[in-house]
Length: 159
Image 1 (cartoon, rainbow, N blue to C red):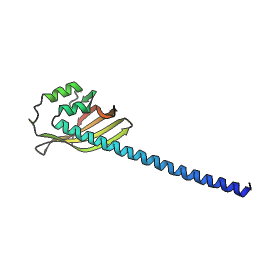
Image 2 (cartoon, rainbow, N blue to C red):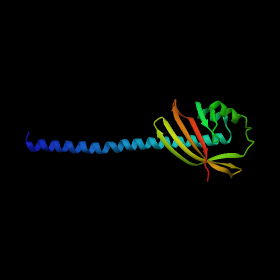
Image 3 (tube, rainbow, N blue to C red):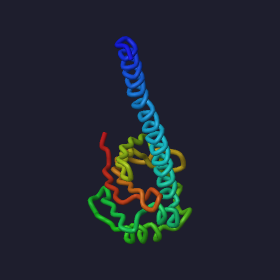
């Protein structure tokens, strides 16, 4: 084998290796960004379902959305377990209020099977805004393939 032929093979394999190396990260990034978009969509849907369930309130839906060990720190500082929070919501008569929640802003930071979601929401009575906005920090965990809310901390946003 002559020297020119051998150096051509080395050059071609080097170029092929560089091309492959440049192409692979884009493919990995594309897969990663597709997954991030899917997780973002899932969690936005979960937050919308949570808002609707709290507006009802829908005890059945909240029971499915909240993990068994869910804990909530309310705006007044009280810490409630899942069962205590559900009991307080059960005490409300369904349909007795026209109070509804809407998410004004949702920021998601996902870390594999965990996510922290920052939600700014407001409450409305008969379509009219009621009181100040609330900021919630929600911690979601994927358990048995389903996103479940494990912790919430709620604060009133003062103007």
